[in-house]
Amino acid sequence: EIVMTQSPATLSVSPGERATLSCRASQSVSSNLAWYQQKPGQAPRLLIYGASTRATGIPARFSGSGSGTEFTLTISSLQSEDFAVYYCQQYNNWPRLTFGGGTKVEIK
Amino acid sequence: QVQLVQSGAEVKKPGASVKVSCKASGYTFTSYGISWVRQAPGQGLEWMGWISAYNGNTNYAQKLQGRVTMTTDTSTSTAYMELRSLRSDDTAVYYCARVLVVGVADYWGQGTLVTVSS
Image (cartoon, rainbow over all chains, first blue to last red; front, side, top):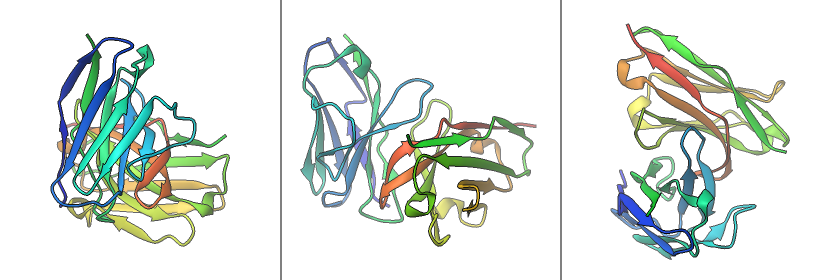
């Protein structure tokens, strides 16, 4: 099983600042990496797939990068609605899909 | 617009089975697969499996093999997930999601809380 490790577990950021979230795979997943956002009591929302392709309707302040084993989600200027938990997920090892443990982005 | 509407919360005893439904609308049901993902209280996301709404092919997470069955009814655009021999650690919110490309879920249902308790 490919293990996905996200860091940090919690990120404290002020509104308007930049947030950088990391995701590391235990082996190469090529560019088969997605990012999801989840707010309390809500279902996850797809942000990024293919490591860097924004899903439909996702604002340009969200960007993804990386390939192989190291990936980054960047939120260029945090808005109040961006405080949430973010998960990465690899889909290279189909059908053995795995998620990271999540990074909580909280207000500083 | 694409919508996935799931059935309501369930309370089950250990050893029982549960069947969760997921009714899709706003797109051609047979053109996409459906994944099921669960989330235990306060925990992260766990992928359970996938079903092709086109031909019914399935893939299940290894740890659930033998206890889970995913099906679809194309006449009603509804997907189902049945989990048998329930244990307390199956207590979770269960989500269905439309699969955009293999492994990537672009639209999600609202979630169904399944509580397993004696």
